[in-house]
Amino acid sequence: MFLKSAIATIIIMGLTGGFIYWGTDVPLDKVVLAPKSVVNDGGKVEDDTSPKVQAKKTWTDLRSGLSSTTPKDDVAEPKAVVVQVDREVTTPDKKHDIRVARILKTSKLEADKISQFDLKDQAYLRLVDYAVANEKYGEAKSLLVSLSSPQLRDTARSRIAIGMALSGRDRAAFALLKEVEVDALKDVLRLQVIEAATDLSVGVNPSQ
Image 1 (tube, rainbow, N blue to C red):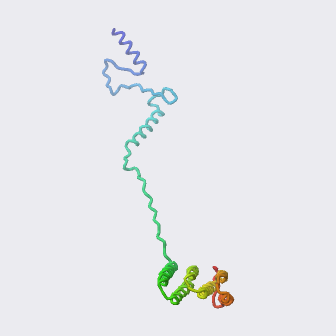
Image 2: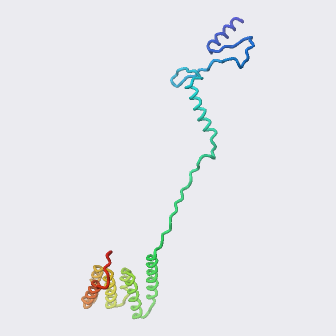
Image 3: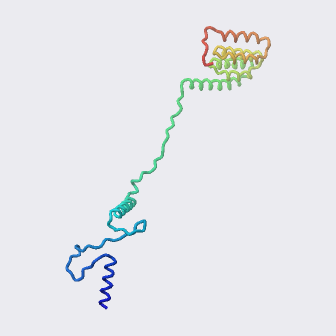
């Protein structure tokens, strides 16, 4: 029985490549154990202490250590992007246009409340002059329907057309004369627009 056990022990020691000292006084720290074997990706057996295997283990351990020891607080949180939009700057010209539009709107509402037709017509003609003086020709033409007679409407048209001609809008001025209602006034108004368009004291606006 003892012989069989001894043979089995020798066989095991031969397979594992190790050696056990029986009945000796050799310190355990002096015992050299056989290196372990590992199977690589290609199916070959390699020494566990080989540089290739050790390098692979070191990289695996390093990755494991980083993934397990990295504090979550060190991870940068995505920050919201704040876009600052500058408010629109109001220029002096724009302020002036806003003021003119407000005055025309408010004054038109007040003129509508006048009960006497002659006074109401005077008020509307005054608003036409104010709009023309500020080159608000569209607003001036919108006031024509508020005048009570064709003669007054043609008077307002002549003022608008002359204002257009003086500001370099001669084609728009002559186009407006096509809407004149009183035939007897057409030639006179056309002459007035020609004189305004060719006024030597008024410089030509190159933008028109």
